[in-house]
Length: 285
Image (cartoon, rainbow, N blue to C red; front, side, top):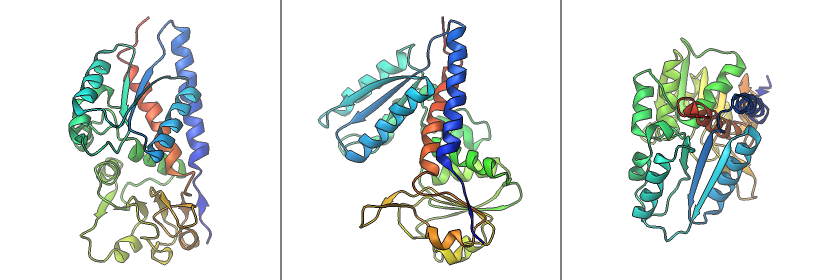
């Protein structure tokens, strides 16, 4: 068996084209263009790449992108002041603060300062709580993107064993909530899980988001399963690799995401989708 690739780049392009069409319809009706404010503090090279990709996606999706590139020396109070200003700005529908933040800024406090209706990353406790209660408003981008990849495959999680490896607030925990919402029977594995192998071997749908290359071995993968690799790691040779042994897993899985070109583009596409949806109750002529 050789798994079919789930082309996140192509699927994301379809979403961005659809969003662009909806924006053009809004403009034709005399409504304003939805706006996304992207804040980056410091000059972390990886963050700079991610921010550049998000701003490029805004252009491709027809959204207004407003850049706030702040120096590393920016204080927590100054960042809070900027966020509060953007919360009041009628032209801004989404606020994204690129993580990680410098150590002198409390990340959780900053997330909670964002108006939940403009929290297009979906990290605010209000939005995560809505997802937990099965009444989602704005959904965390990466898990939301993964659900769209699974839907694209055409295999419903309903009644299937879904295993999430990793329990971070950004991916693992909300991913488990999304899979529950889709009717899956969900197991979450984390750093205290004693033996990962049997859980992986039982997974009809496997989502791995740890940040450790090769933590899931190819021979563990259940034949015919769907494997979603959220990991993005830089190998010694400079190559980007995921958390799953791709070559080994591809011989057993039914469907698998590549790294890069799988989950990453979908995360950005869902950010665009969240921004468009956040603008729905806020647009004006």
